[in-house]
Image (cartoon, rainbow, N blue to C red; front, side, top):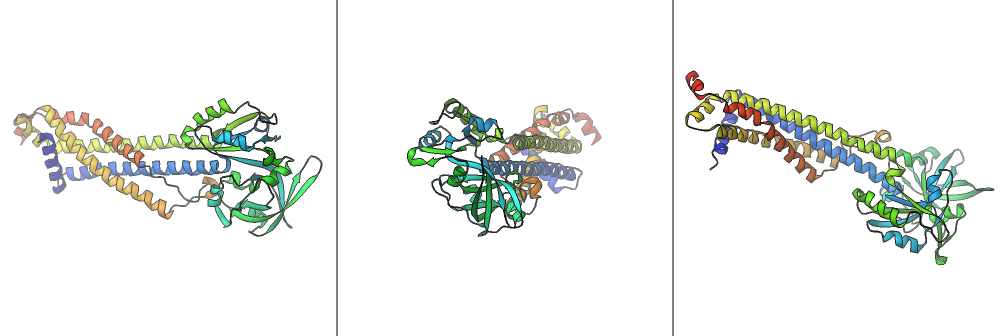
Length: 422
């Protein structure tokens, strides 16, 4: 049997059942560990949930990588098409790491009702476009089936736009588009209303069919002739963490190449298009590291102070062990094992508390947020079991390693003095 482990377990059980000073000291140390672990779990889960929620919303509107005309990506006031024929889309889908490639067209216009009008961006999509993100956020009506070969005159607007124009599903709304020489008018029926709380997009984006928007731009949509002039292609990748790797493949195989109409292709990632949002999300990582460091410090200091109190109270036990021939190493190991028992119990309590709070928020949405400020209506939670395990292991190792000095203090006790005092 491991003698230090056996003695430490006996001391730990005796401390639980006694009314000595060590009992509140042990409880305070456990409480410090439990609070630290619970705060770390909640902090990491909230930040990961928040980052991924915002990231998924931004990607839902703009995909991971956009392939478009070089001039379109370089100038904000000029939109030049590319020929995204079926063969081009097939090539893009064949690039390693790309999960899906889809066409889109954009056109600025004005929505007008009898009493109000509003400038918006129309985004045209076809039947090959992944509309699951918008469909998931529909709050009224439905996501209609869009087309790239015929006009459906169906429109999906955001709740923000609908509120400003007093629109509901089934309403007719006029849309005006400024051409080179005239103003073009179209009548759309509101088929659905979505709400993502990402105001940057909700305030301006409407979804219509690709055919209508491309025609309003004066472009050709004729897949049978191998000509599909659109604003660009959006690429969805398998893993966001491999974004830079897939981007390099796009740069090597697509950028600076010419389509069949002589247009130069180029690409941008979602991080390039929305640098402010992703820089803001990256700053959250710094906050998490600060919180983790503070909580580990709290756990370590409470554990050190608790162990020192226990050592001071157990000097008679230390003196007796040394009088019986125990070496300093055995004494140190004994009190380190005692510290491990306290740390592990505190960690168990902290895990139950932290994971319990996360599950409560995840399934009830108890804590609400201002959606206009934080882009989400409630605190998002993402429980990453691997990260929780890593936090527990790291906390245990750091706490045990920090107790080397207090355990050295225990080994310095002089048995002769202790026995004489007793």
